[in-house]
Image 1 (cartoon, rainbow, N blue to C red):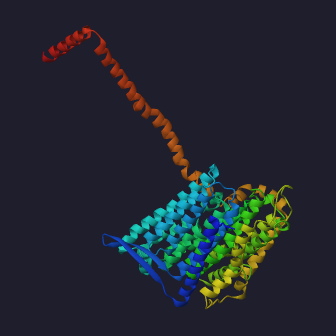
Image 2: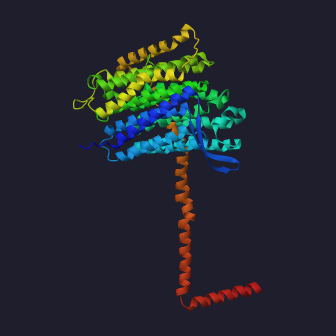
Image 3: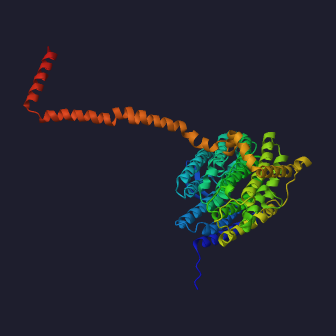
Length: 575
């Protein structure tokens, strides 16, 4: 008997092997404190060496390990989710190209080598967002790539500015960038904000949910969107004590609050999870801007595990209910899909920071360190409200889709019988339970010293419980709540549409230029330019050619008359 192995299984095994190698090497690097740097000098330009740099330290190796394990799980999961897709091989190649681009970016140590992977991420993510080739996907893809191009331009400008330092290796120069390098820091902050979808570039992340669900699990939860956070972690030494750091704190806290608020008014299952990703990206960047880049990296890794699992569970649910993504059409799934619902609940509890789940170790420490820092009242208030809103929209999601009343049609086939999907979720489910504690013990063998009053210490727990209670009460009275929301329709629309961010990023951004272009087309292209341009010249030349043709074809009379006229004019001029 010949044992056949499919492409997605080969890819999964290869990526898991790579993850194991990178993970063990990364843990050894933590213990030894050694960093390996490999450089190839390509050529020299005006005294600056253009080099290809690879850095093998504990940060890059652990991040690569997590990227590989999530990519492997997603590709194995795709073997069932995308089984009926005629272009499945193209999907596989795109995902592998994405993993390769991510590897380039993570292992790069200078701005030029990072830019290779950075631009590759933008290009491949565009190809994945427009994978289904319909109008919605095309619009989402265009918004995604144009938003990310802003960050690409900022990186290019940063490369130009750093050339005056004589090199692009930020390991050498980050510690020496004072306030005179403010412009470079602003460009780097903008590039990180676009990739990590911070205000005002937040609209593309929920729009990118037009991609297949496995893509969302990989690209829009743990890799692409965290590229901006990773860049800021690498440049964290340059941000210390700068004005850029304060600006990033306010922007990230606002994004965290805005995403949490929007998720409470959203009914699309994938968009709710996308907004929760946006909220957690705000958490990462806010703690990084307070000077704790190691905590930001810790949350980046733990968040990747449970958020990828949450997307994969959402994919199984959407697959089972026949393609619906509206949570109001679901309900009581726990009776039909107990295993999937269990994994989804684990991921949701980790997201809320439930004790001893993966999210608890990073999120609880981040909030306590933030409360202990020199933080202004606005940022503190946004932290507290965002924490409550996270529990609130998580319970709302559980109430509508997993528990509550059964709202699906009787012909819907719901089950947990797809072993490919459930097996791939089991790997990340284990990570969502144990990943946080293992990372905490590995990255922080000596715990942070947290000194808080009893009120501040209980703040996180109190706000989480309050947010859960408010969310549950509002959903129990969901009919009345929906009717009441109609009386404040404008306010509800504003909060539910990310403060009009999608509108401002698309139509409002191009409205005036489109109107001016339309006016110019009517007045100029189809008006005066046409009258004095193509059509006018055609008419003028045709008349001239008609006269010349008449002169050539007519008899000698015309030439005699012309001769007489010329002689008369000549005589008049002489006299």
